[in-house]
Length: 341
Image (tube, rainbow, N blue to C red; front, top):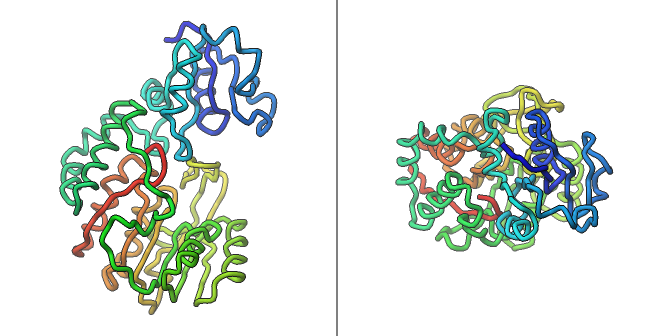
């Protein structure tokens, strides 16, 4: 239990979740601190929002506990923690906060109870051995140590995000791309491909957010002169309608209680007579289901696969386990391109 009053650094999704739980547990949260105070209202759930340099806190910080209410891939959490430790009596980082209240929160992004890793020990060891190079094994081990230790300084720094789907340190000869983009967003990936002058002859994008689809369509129309298709839907293991929690940043995901409803399809149902050689998936935790829905396509053409493995705690092993079940001789590599694993 915390004896002192609490402030929460960060007024985004995770910060608000922290505040909600602390209030329910009877703790006093005196304010949010946010670098960009006016991005939010002056109060959130009756809790004041102050800017990072607010004079109101100057004389109180030494007697306050600060909860880091940030949990995303866009900032180095270790640097933020180090800065906060200079000012506050105690700092509780997101991983430690989750451990304190995991029963209340449930699985959140890749945060999950430590027991869930121990239950899957045999599968984790099997997947570790399946990586094709030493660095992948090293990184896999590093991510697990990070999740178990709650030490923000342990995790490796990210590699250059510009090489995210085409890593320069993996010896791979890329064909002229016939590219499926699952989670196409606004076309950022296809624009990078074109800007880097990689040969590409076919582009098929899947994106359920209609605003993003409009941006994607405009980008394809204005900048890309190849055979292109856009499907305004998500990717799954069949045709369905699913609830989706849009949120912002790292919190968007398929959610049975989500506010938005999206259409989803399987690649096997939709991609007919296209000799695909590259599939990219960054689809908010739907990767395993989408892979199962692409089993025939993957088995037939054996495309290069670039699959995000950070949305759920068990993505680290279930993605490789799923691909292995197709009985294709794939080589597996792991790389990291943003912060926080």
